[in-house]
Amino acid sequence: MIEFPLSIAHILNPVALDTFISRYYEREQLVIDRGRPSHYDGLIAVDALDDMICAPASTSEDILVVDDFRDIDREDYARADGTIDCVRVQQLFDEGATIILRRMHDRLASVARLCRGAEQKFGCAFQANLYFSPPNAQGLTTHHDTHDVFVLQILGSKRWHTYQPVVPLPLPGQRYYWKTPPEGQQISSFTLHPGDLFYCPRGIPHNARATEGASLHISLGARVCTWAELLLEVVADVALRDPAFRASLPLGYAANAIAPEVLEKAMQDLMGRLQRQARPDLVLGLMADRLIIDRPVLIPEQGRMIQAAASLTTDSRVGGRPGLMYRISVQRKKVTLICNARQITFPRFAASSLEFALRTDSYLPTDLPGPLTETAKVVLIRRLMREGLVVALPG
Image (cartoon, rainbow, N blue to C red; front, side, top):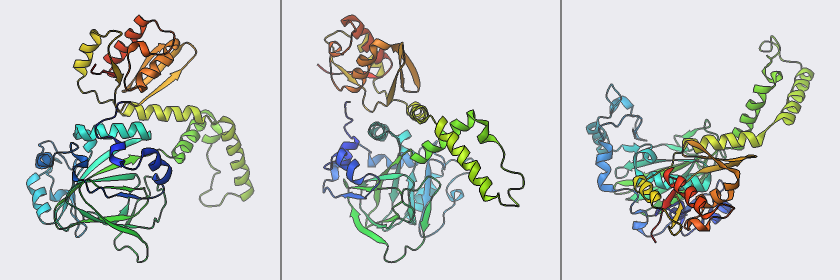
């Protein structure tokens, strides 16, 4: 695939993505001190920050104001209809509060492109929040996140402290906060400057305080799917088909404990039924389909791509669209492509050509493998371009 200018590989550089996954991912925090303030140039325009905070349609779901020193209620800066009073937000910032701009992956195209590229590499949804802190301010008390976090320092600097996990790899409901971190539990302390990166696996408690100037960082959150979620989905799938799982517990179980031998026999029976009827491959595929359908493709310049498709020839250079998440399912007589919130079917003999067309960064239509004629290859690429999945390239 063609990489976005600011890709997850660029964010992690000089640590290779494969090295990151094998050594750090879900295991160990990573701090990259680059000494290069321009590393994230093009991701966000600091000059536009005021406009984002004061956007007319912003609500208390889009913007939060927090301060570790005091409690701030949403009513302190939001009107009765939920819209933000940006004057009050800026006053609170001047008094030492941190402004959190949420869902930047939905509000800023450059951040959305970065998240889509990361989603393609990691196979999970990414979100992005922006944290703007005044000098010497700490927005949140010591806590752990229930998703992996990539912190990209954009402006100013921030001093971070990390601590030994209390709940390793927590599930979404397993939140944890410390008002006063216990002594002897600290892992490390470090300061992030513009261009630096901090990767914090979920479950590692941390806090951060701006230094002498205002601080701005972007927090990319990887919302992974866990084995526990897959297992729960497998159980639900079996329960929908087997009435034994839907039978009620013994009457009076709340007042009188179920006899141990009865409970053991029931659990052995249900576990045996689960093992015999489980369809993990099917359930995993459905989970993947949901993820892909929920992550629509970013299709800038699609009007130009449709025009380019009309004049496509065997000598036209094309490539798979950057950040594309998709799944190809091959049945007996057809191939189903799940991508961009839709399903598209093709003849089965087009499977190898389709896969090549989506995953290859630069090629000519005639490069497609498989039994398609040259004319059919052009027709396939033209269709994929009209669907927003293949792009025209120079030369």
